[in-house]
Length: 148
Image 1 (cartoon, rainbow, N blue to C red):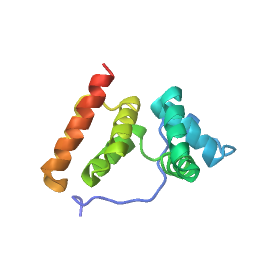
Image 2: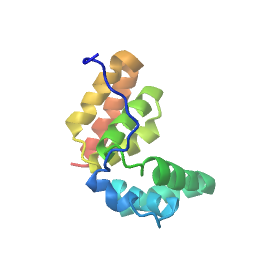
Image 3: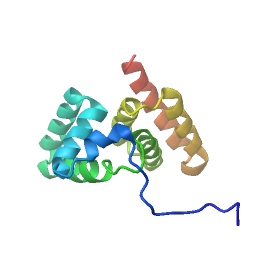
Image 4: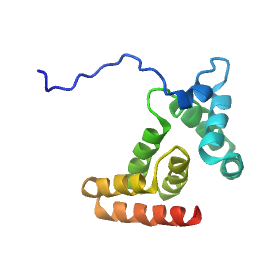
């Protein structure tokens, strides 16, 4: 029994780095979402990304800001870096390359290193396929070179 992993649903203390974005009970999901997107992308890139979503479909921008960013990403129990690395693996495995590129940029702002991003992409190769890994590495390489 000692070797088994104990699964618990008890609330862990939120990481300090997220507390300023997610702790305010007075903030609406939209306000939390906007603040978090600014933090993860930088205000200029966040604004440009939101404008692109608005041009495509205003409801899409609202769903991403209010639900995805303001509700899901604002949850306090995982650090942003871990959320980013998990998201990168899921998007690469699914072949969602636009989302993958955006999330690689966010991961770098959330404290992930290029080496960690490459490592999680390599890790998915046997699970999601070598082509998914390869495409993810190509996108990551492009992002890393742009940020140099």
